[in-house]
Each structure stands twice: as structure tokens, then as C-alpha cells.
Length: 259
Image (cartoon, rainbow, N blue to C red; front, side, top):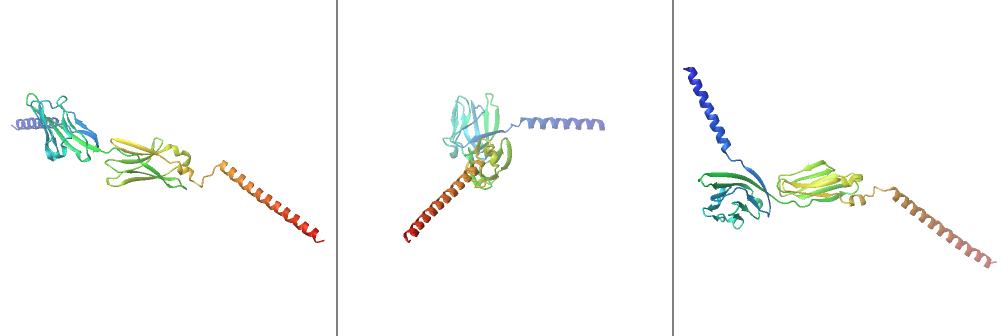
């Protein structure tokens, strides 16, 4: 009797395990998709007979009727931006905006009236502008790289292929800045890079960091400066000797005239 109860319990637990596993595997996987502000994005699920597009808490934002008729202006914020292609069966959202980010679900009704659901997590990003590199201190050759912050933006300094330092911030209303002291001898190997999941821009160290550094003088500069100093001294000595000769000559004339 006890053995029979244990066997029934094992069978029940096995059944529950299989049932839960089947339900878990039947849940649609959420696809992660990325969009760019001002661009378009298609949800790649074919709706050819009838179906819907749902968005977050707003629910149904577009509907496809049998006979290839659609209504994509159910919600004002998507008016004239949401379209359905009766050939491909895809819903497409145009002129993407940052606040279009969110969860979209495509409901598709098949020929046998079976309904399937496909979920998309859309994240919309700005295309980054080129970062600006400015000279902060000419003497030490310290530069600062800056770029306007945005969603998932990182700002990094590289030397060759090696990352030197990096910064980011959850505050989207600030400008990211990252200072760096540059080795003047290897200035060309540095670059500042701003990146997000959809774009990447970089900038180099400006030449003025080297040209404006008065503490760095080359051997050629030393020789030129020394030659100029010697030339000036020679001119001054020659001028003094000429002046002295003229003075002595005039003095001799006055002496002879007085005799």
C-alpha cells in the first residue's frame, strides 16, 4: 500500500514537471531589437490574414482585418508613423523617437484560427555626434574629451588598441568629459571614442598640444636661438666700435683746431 502511494506520488510529480516544462517552453521568447531616432524598424513577423500589434500598457495600436484591410491609426502618437505591408505582412514603425522604446507584441491569426504571439523589446538610440578634444594644459599636454550623453553612451581614451580609461553616466542631461595627460612623443597613437549600441565616433589629439608647449625645445631650435644671440651681440659690438671711432676722430679734430 505504501509502495503504491509512493509510486503515484512520483508519477504525479513527473507529470507536473513535464507540464510546467511544456508551459515554459511554449512561452514566446522576447526578441531584443534596436532602433535609431528618425529611422524605421519592421517587426519581422508576417501577419497575412488577420492580427494585431500591441504596445506596452496601451494595448492594441494596429489591427489587420481579413481581406488585407488594416487600421494603423488606433493611437494618436503613432498616427502616420505605423504601417502594415499587405505583401510582406510586416508592421513597420517609421520616424522613430526615443520614447517609442518599449515592449511590442505581434498577434498573428493563422488560417486554422490559431493565434500566435511574438514579443519584441525595442530600444531606440540617438546617433552619436563626434566627440570634442580640447587642450586643457599646454605645459603638461593635458587634453579633455567631451561628448553629449545619451542612452548607454560610453566615452573612452585609447592608446593604440589599449583602452586607458572610460566613463559613463545614468544622467542623460549632462556632458560626459574625460581628461588625459598625453605623451607628446606618441601623440598620434591616442584617440578618444564615444560609443553606444548603434553608433561610434572618435577624435584625435590636436596638434596645438605640442606646438604651444614652451617647455619643449628641439636641438634645431637651440642652435637657431644661439646663432641669433651671437649675431645680436656682434651687431652691438660693431656699433659700439664704430661709435667709438667716430668719437675719437672728432676729438682729434678739435684738439688740432685748438693748437
